[in-house]
Image 1 (cartoon, rainbow, N blue to C red):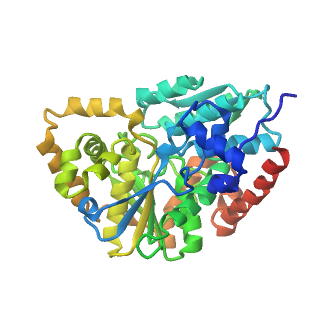
Image 2 (image 1 turned 60 degrees about the vertical axis):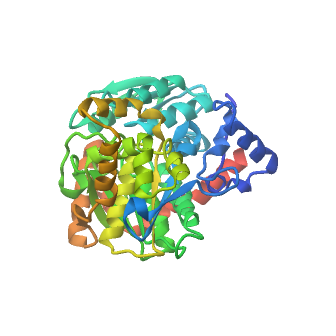
Image 3 (image 1 turned 180 degrees about the vertical axis):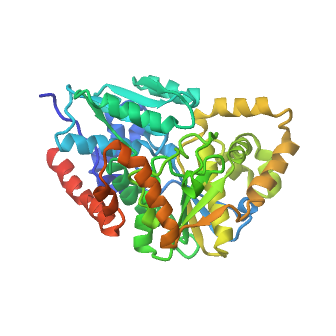
Length: 451
């Protein structure tokens, strides 16, 4: 049998200081070196070399609210996105459980973008062949990055049912026993990674910021892994409100809409299996064009940001740290702060999933749609998009009768993939989710024992 490779435990991803000093030193050195060095597995963390959460606190001159908008930065993860975390967690759980065997299995990665990149990257480091299954209407940079890491592409038609087609293709390919899928939409390592690593990192991120508590957390679901951080945030701050963000053009959770949109990686036209809808207090809609315009401002509108009152060096620091979904999350955080009437000292936390490196073509396409994107245009956009964000298009899902719509949506999406009504009904109790989370300790032990 081929040697089984190993990386960090869930606890070590949350706190890399738990690694022995020699290994931690090698991992930090690898950050500036060869990204394909397997020691980079130990850089799968929200922490920087100083063991502090990578984040920015956006000033009120940009957000227009008194509350602190705290953004955790995912671009510092290996491969450039925090989606590498659940890709690794799903693969490592399969390894320690003996369900994925080196030298025997090919890894499938159903995705609309960053998870596919993460799958190709993790598979490369751990010595597996990877096939990424994704729609054919994503940015070309995503495809190029997957190929760079040695992944193969299996593209499905980009249409109003593109994610469903991707899932159907994945389940079809899983009939071959040689294929093992890192099925992010339905496997719970994704939930465990984000509840444990992202959730607890968010709690750390507000220490010393405002009142040190989290009043709100916003996340735009693709697989709905990241929003699992809200479960852990609520465990520590029960009063915190969790908002799922959707494209206005694809408002599946809010009202069943399934249109096309420009915010890659989110709005996947379903209520995913691993989405704990019990913890979703609000669904907020964000217009896709505003996220692309916002990306243009962060990237090329430095003078517009300075005109708003931002420090120039701070404005420059934002250029490479956001993609459209990150802008979406920021706009959702501003809307939630306004809707909840949050004041000075209150904190709303969100994430920037990736950085600008995979969106050059998105801004090139935006440039083709507008005759003028000069500085005065970007200045107007900045005022309209960020300072002008309002508290409209906020759907309150706190009542059980309203939340029932999400339960029904989940049944509609997942009964067809072979899950039983009994299993789906079990997800209506928080104990189900807490039991899934409790397995973190079990997998910590398994990884440590076999490493």
